[in-house]
Image (cartoon, rainbow, N blue to C red; front, side, top):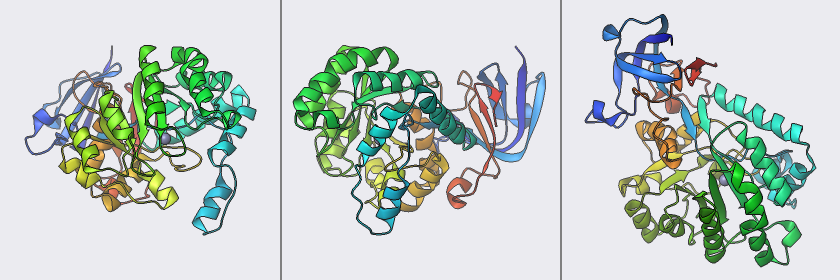
Length: 390
Ligand SMILES: [Zn+2]
């Protein structure tokens, strides 16, 4: 296999804590990275780089691990421009929210859905995202949920069954019947395509008992749990996630002290999704409070057509720094290593020997520019599995 050295990196973020006592980012100045096949095989000071078959001059730019976007909803059709416009213009809007997307998604062909996923993935890749998780949840029938997961599974191994996004409009008068479907025939049809099971545990969606039944049924089928928890108000989602050892509790916007304690004592990652608060003008999650309690935090886009239609991890980093009390270092860690932790992965989210060669070169001397220069397209080059793709 050929080896390639990327040299003349002004600052390299490795996320290898053994390299630096002061920072979990494990930074190396004037660095080089050597890749072989789809793996990183060496990191260190540029002057000490071993001989390789090929060399790439990074031109004094900063390099970071590819972003790990651990929460998105990309299998959908249609958009909700008018709903967003009305919300941001202070006008009432009476369309059906998620139901609008469910109707458009059901009406779309397989090809249309697949083309949409490919388009948003390409968009994310250009912005440095090399791993993403995505969910079903806009089909809400056995066939439509299984179809969404089948399409998603062609693009990522991080596929999540979210039949329990909302109670299907077809079961508006029989939510218990819908839970039976989600934990029965729909689960049977979906489990072969999914690694994860998720539930929207919130007032107006699924309560704690329903969420527990749904997650437990998924676990019995070999899926691992993650939970949409405490986005719109206080509720049982976060503590249920920790109790079931979910990989992550996502949103975590409204937390009691007991919720924060549970997260700090468990191994469930708190995934914060600032695009959702931005796009709905909602209260920001208090990242500072969670971090200071010792909780592992991930940042993710929640890319979806209703409440957070951004695929940009740099944008989320900028929001987290500006409005959620995170330092630039914490925000970058959460968007890379934190995302990997939220997917229980150790091969991504870091640049170290053995890790997947998912690398992002920034048109900037430091990763701090991601928050310092918000909205500026700073991604200069991307390697995914050792292959230069941007
Ligand atoms: Zn979501």
